[in-house]
Amino acid sequence: MKFRQNALKKLNALDELDAPARLAKPSSWIALAAVAFVVIGGGIWATVGSLPRMVTAAGILTHQQGSFTLQSPVAGQITGVFVDQGSTFPQGTPMLTVQVGNRTEIIRSVTGGRVTAMLGKVGQVIAAGSDLAVIERIEDQSDGLVAVLYVPTGEAGLIRKDTPVDLAVQSAPAQEFGVLRGTVVSISQFAESRQQISDFLGDDQLGDRFTAQGQPLKIVVRLMEGETASGYRWSTQSGPPYRIDSRTLVTGAVQLSPIKPIEWVVL
Image (cartoon, rainbow, N blue to C red; front, side):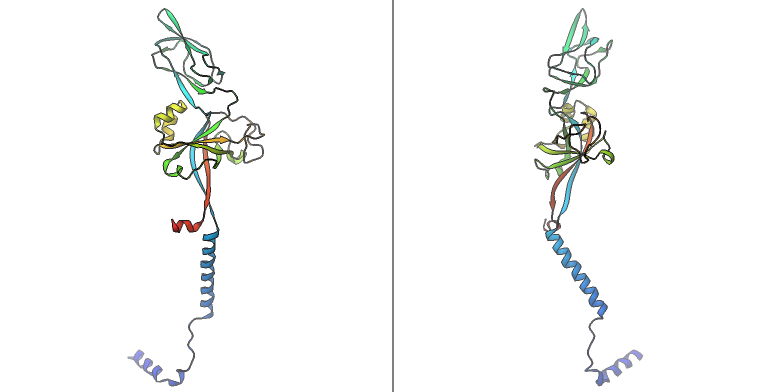
């Protein structure tokens, strides 16, 4: 009843009817102006500004034609190994000899290349189809390295030819030497299976590694040449003071075209 009596007294106070009403305190107007400034500024930034985008993917340094595993066409005992790991050779070079009964079979390379892993040893008894060596296909000794990235199919659709790529090289810490520069030269049309990757790289473990999250698309990156010890361009002036070899794992950051924040809302 007390609150009702007070309300009735205010209604009877006719002298206060002409008093101006205060809609908001000055501090409220300041807060409202600040909010309006933020909204307008955010709208301008969303329309005019841009945000960088990138796709990261695991990969490896290799030559354009990849590698293959040399297998023995015969069963017998290895009696000679003529090439060492790291050596290069032309097509038709004798690689090993295998004693098969009373005759000696010479196993030759079907292409020129470089031995990245010699698996056969003198005295070893092998069966037909045994792995003898992993060979990188190199038809021209001047062929440079490329980086092959395996990108998840859901992200590869954003990548275009000539897109710049930064490559963190496992054997050259990025904190010290920076990243290797490159550009996209090709994008596979179809996803790569584990077996396709294993056949191209000559390594089943790499096939497992690059398909751990599903079948990816293959992105080939051309490395930019530079006047450095490695022969390639880096984000730092000199890069590492040594040669970067093939079969080195890398992580690629593909630099996509920037996107305007408002496109997130529209899309």
